[in-house]
Image (cartoon, rainbow, N blue to C red; front, top):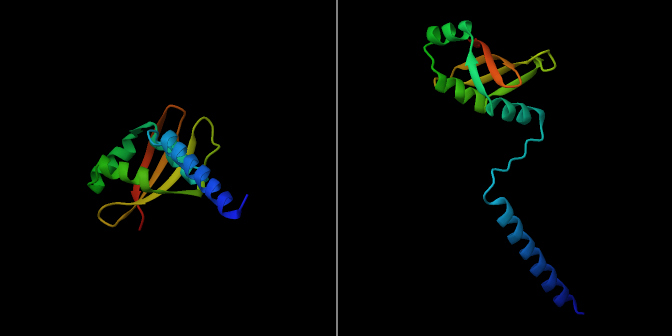
Length: 125
């Protein structure tokens, strides 16, 4: 078999494989969360969250709302050096993120099995 025929068969099979893969993954929300920060953010965002009294009063003092909290939870960065992920019964995470007013916000979270508790909200100076 000539080289040109081999390349043609290879490209034909490869293109059919790509079409089959596109068909299988088209309707699903697939994502790749391989790194620790991506896995923790995905875990936190799949659960509902509640605010502690301290966090709620901090939000009113800082004149922020839950839209800002949602933005930080989705786009924030977790500082694993300050966090205690193996703390029992709920891991404690320190998260930093920017608000719409170009301020940096610090959240202290407890990531429990069923929900996330936001313990503290503060501005980083």
